[in-house]
Image (cartoon, rainbow, N blue to C red; front, side):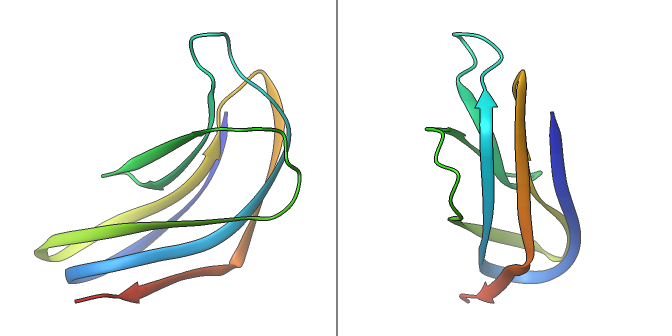
Length: 98
């Protein structure tokens, strides 16, 4: 297991998180835990089954902040017996939707 995490402080509103990563040689933990990629925030994680593609992959997810100000942790990670994750930190951006 491993993850890239980045804390951000966000005002109330809706945001879209965009970025990219590359993963290779991922092996699931077992037949019941086939999802090997996680991304999103500590409030809303999304899991993917990885097909072995080693190219750069785009991710995107929406973040809804209902508090006046909230600390959010953005994450991209892997879970498995083996594998490699590369996160393009410069590609990550937040777009305010509302």
